[in-house]
Image (tube, rainbow, N blue to C red; front, side, top):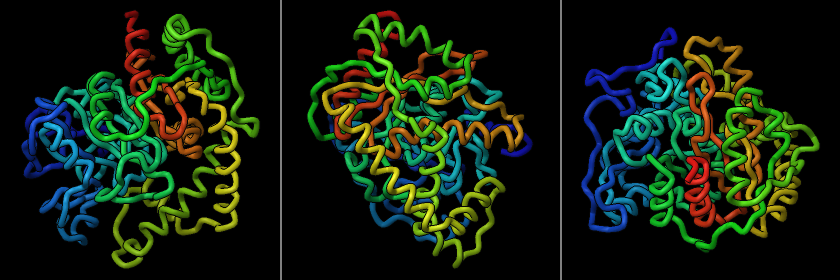
Length: 402
């Protein structure tokens, strides 16, 4: 993106796919995903194709992939056809969805607003109906945020529940594979292909994460109120819980220190060897990662142990946390960098709930603010991904009034 204008591809589409020849592949055999078409964020390896990670100098300094990420192969073995690689924020270091090198995909649900990142192209492709579902990665919210901004269902899986082999890392202890889908049913069907673990449903209750609701812009909280009430009608009254006595801002502060340390371990060698150019926001984040104080990161890791000890027992019996996925709708393309930074900090405060605690999270389109989508998140116990997806199908029916 340049000058606040999102990218319209030459064929008139939303600019979701990486420019140039399209990486496509037929299904390997028939299966439960027969007839479905999917896309992958450009940090998933496809044999014989470059893994660009959203940056031309990354692509230029790495050989084409020698193998295909197992998650991609699993989808093709289940009958799905690969429709292409999607644009992403360079090196997955951003939540707006911008890419100054390849263009920023249009948000099909709110064209005057950012699509969200880092998996911006995957979310846009699904929202535009160009594919039925799309893979993305989620570290700090890179699936959940664009899903909310573009008005589609999305999931961040429990760490380790889907193989990260063949997926470019960012901050490995937080990185997870996720996906977007055209509806909650398709989201769950993909999960049945990719996920192990028990299929059992959530037994409740709903837990309303109070700090996350208070962190939301009042218009967003109000827009999601009807959806919450419909969930309560279906599943029982939500119980208010306090999960952040330190303040939701502390979640952002601790998350970013550990993430930054891991980002530099992952990318620092390449940065120092290649001295690549960065767009301003990404360059600042890479510089902060280089300069991160190890003592601060150690405090962040200690806080992660505290939060896991707090939240995992709370959800172990089948309860589901519910809260706004993002504190506001997608920022306008014309918003200033300072405005974007404020939204980023407030957003990571809530995406870090599942991120730090290592929990699965599904976001569902559940309201609009000034015509722009906002999502409602459901978080379950670590490893309860299949049950959460089944619950999300029911939840989406309830939100729609079914």
